[in-house]
Amino acid sequence: MSAERGSGGPPVQVSILVPTYNESQNIVGLLRSLAESIPRSIRAQTIVIDDNSPDGTGRLADDYARGAREIAGHTVDVIHRRAKQGLGSAIMSGVQQAAGSTIVVMDSDFSHPPSVIPEMIEAVKQSRCDIAVASRYVAGGAVRGWPLRRRVLSRLATGIAKRGLGVEQHDPMSGFFAFRRNLLDGLKFDGIGYKMLLEILVKTRGARVKEIPYTFTDRRRGASKLGAGTALAYCRSVWRLYRHGRAAARGGPGRASARFLSKAARFYTVGASGLGVNYLLSLLLAAGFGGVWYLHANLLGIAASMTTNFALNKYWTFEDRDFSPRRTAVQYGKFVAFSSAGALVQLGMVYTLVESHSLGYPESLVLAVMAAAFGNFVLNKKWTFREGLWP
Ligand code: GDD
Ligand code: MN
Image 1 (cartoon, rainbow, N blue to C red):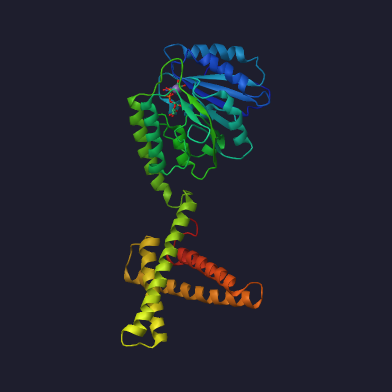
Image 2: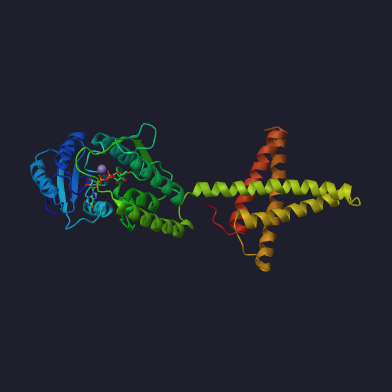
């Protein structure tokens, strides 16, 4: 680190991290443009992280930093690393030095327009989100100047992240993003390759993310550092994140709502199938085979549907594959108990609602069925199959 942080004065609020490798044709222009784009009301610090660029980018940044002392409200620091160690690790070095509570990460080659930064900072500072992603792939965003090959590769990498890692954002590959610094507290990062944002998104699942559209314009000066090695690094990084995700999946915040809803949907599908079993068996026993007394037939129909419901919920809904007799018997007992209790609750609710004249019978019935069904799902989830209530 060459330039020490501006002593005295109010504390830095925002740190802008700019990793560079051979960007001598861009760095000074970018630092100027940053100084103009960030409102004076924000105490900002730009940190250039240079990996000993052979073209002298580091020296240019140092020179600029010395002069920039005068510009009100905006300091420039330079971190000099001994050799090229990759973009992800450069960002992590910057995070360690950052004094601001909000951190912005961007490229130094003008692909990321500084004019978007104020909106990103606002989003994070106003606590409307934890991470603001400048995004090419939401409405209003675009990519300009990329050859077909890069476009296809980018979409492919994005697809892998979405499907393979279950990331919900449209542009998890963006190199342009802002976040609350303390979001990373206590987390460990691999910092492999280019994909810092993806790693952050996966490891802070449940964080509130806002995507802000922007137009990525391919660099006019200098060359991209993205090579064959980057693709390899990407695969390694996805693999590690995938294993990380599997380890965190149990109990992790994950896509909790999605998992909860998908289980509820299975539970009610099973319930519907139970109605079918109940109805058919009750009819068949009474009419078809030797005329069992209709109430007995219905009782058998109920028992049969409870049993098929239980088996399907155990195996399919809650994916419990342990069918040892004792465990299964205990679970079956609880399941039947909750189902019966659900029926009683439903009866009681219908009675109360109708008698209090607050609702008609059909409306009361809908409410009561819904309440009982929901209670049934939640109770069985927690007590019969021993999962947490949420997700
Ligand atoms: N310190 C340091 N060390 N900086 C590096 C290194 C490194 O090893 N490698 C690249 N950089 C810097 C570059 O100087 C530039 O400022 C920035 O990181 C991005 O590098 P580019 O080589 O310009 O990347 P790109 O334009 O091909 O890719 C960009 O778009 C991708 C979107 O698909 C980057 O923003 C990627 O992060 C992004 O994923
Ligand atoms: Mn670039």
